[in-house]
Image (cartoon, rainbow, N blue to C red; front, top):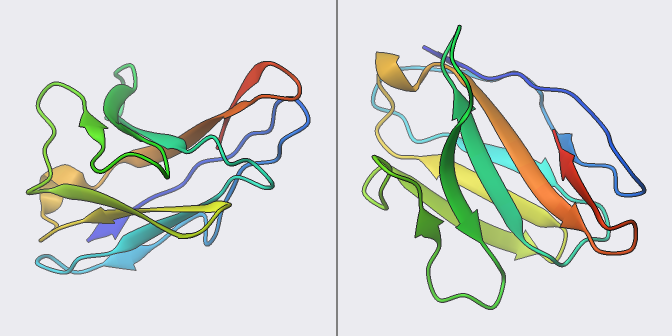
Length: 118
């Protein structure tokens, strides 16, 4: 079972993950949906294991051919897609128990010069 939840708003850009919590079974490939508002600056994803600091999963922009992955993360497990200019989807391939954590979506608000996370 994979459970994901996060919340928060900073600056002029409102970043939302909807739904904020999902439950899936082992072996499935869920897609976490992050809406970055009007942002076209792409998105970053972080994974936070309970009691630890968030770990950088990946950074991606619409114009990039592939995302940049954090240490220990790869395309075999995590992929990103942009169905619209403001939606950044993170897919977690073949989920298992170790994937059941909190995931944060992050973007840069170029108008406010602020980082925004959800």
